[in-house]
Amino acid sequence: MIVTLDALGTLVRLQDPAPLLAAELAARGVRASERQTKEAMAQEIAYYRAHHDMARDEASLALLRERCTAVLRDVLAAAGVDAGALTAPELLDALLASLRFSAYPDAPDALRDLRSAGHRLVVVSNWDVSLHEALRTTGLAALVDGAISSAEAGAAKPDARIFQRARELVGAPSLGGLHAGDSLEHDVAGALAAGLRPVLVARGGRPDGVPAGVAAVASLAELPMLAA
Image (tube, rainbow, N blue to C red; front, side):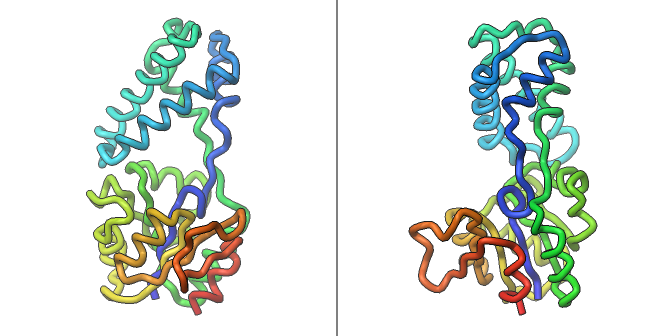
């Protein structure tokens, strides 16, 4: 059986980037408070989320990162931070160094157990092409059979087409399977649209509005049993 999994909020988490950005700027001789960097990162992330699907390859990823860096510079400057003291490549380096992903502790063992049971695993994420880099740096790439970002697929969850691309990656049948993710809007709705059984990853407890019959798990450790 194919098991598809969301990335951010399901397999990996992002460390709070605001204090990291403040530290990275300080290391480059630019003073900024965490309040200033929090606002700057909020706006940079909002811009990124609205445009990440443009980054389908290395060239377009570089362009997206340039634009995100420009947004960051503008917000910092408006807040009184002397971001102009840094060149664009220096500010980009500070930004990228502030975006640190790590695997949830329950992710590696859950993936190993699913593969041991014979399931084919594909990460399906609304992300740019750097999804693969994030999976490598967190040690998860070797534990799955493939990954597809919305930028590469030309479709974002809940569009069923991204799940079809995931099936094609591993030669899975067109029907059946399970998808796990932390978003009702993108993961549960997308799984239902694609004919997959949805599992909501609700680490903070089952939220309101979960459709009847949809399983919710507090830990990925529960997935292998649901996929059996």
